[in-house]
Image (cartoon, rainbow, N blue to C red; front, top):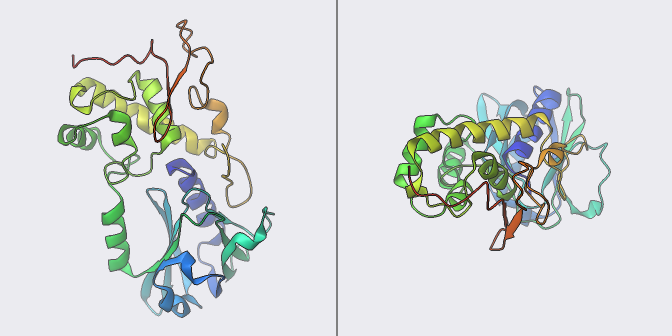
Length: 279
C-alpha cells in the first residue's frame, strides 16, 4: 500500500514532467471512481497544470483555467497508481481515468486502480481545504519537534496505532511505522502517555530520517507500487524489520524479529524494543 514516501515520489515525478502542460482531454471510464465533483470534469479541459503537491498519501494536481484554480486529487489507496503511458500494466481494463496533456514531457497521466479503494476528487479550493482538514493531521516532513511533542501529550493509546492514525499524523502506514519504531527502540504497543520528552524528540528525528531516506530510494515496492515512470522503489532493501519475522535482529543483539499479529502485523525485536515505563 503506498504511503507518504511513495506519494511523494509520485508527486515529484509528475511535477518534473507535466508542470505547465495543458490538459486537453479527460477520459473517465467509470463514474464511481470519482468521489466528488464528477459534474465539473469539463472545466478542466484546456486548463494548465500549475502545481503538484502531496497531502498525506494523496496527490493533488492544481489546474488554472481563466484565473480560476481547481484540483484533481488522487487517493492512491491500496493499489492505486498514477502512471505515464509508457508503463505497461497488468489488467489494463483497470485504467479508470486518463488525463491527456500537451506541452509536457509526457502526453498522458493514467489512474490505474484495480481494487478501487482509492478515488479521484475534482475540487475547488474550499473543497480541497475540507478534504485535507477531514483526512489529515500533522505532516511528518514539516511538523516540528514541538508539534509532535504536543500531539503526543494530547493522545492516549498505543504508539504504533497513533503513528498510523491519519487524522493525527498523515502519511505513515504499516511499513514505515514498523521501521521507525525499530530504529527508535520503541515497542509497537508502547503507551503514548509513557513516552518521555527526550524519546518524543528522538522519535521525531528518526521519523523524518526514515521517510526522507525512503523518498531518496524511490519508496518501497513491496507488492504493487510503481512510480509513474514504472520504476520500483528500492527502499525495501533498507527495511530492517518489516516482513522479517524469524530473522536475526539487524542490531546483532542475539534476538529474533517477531511478528505481532493484529489488524496490521507488527514486526519488532523484543530485546531492542522492550515496553518501557516513562523515564
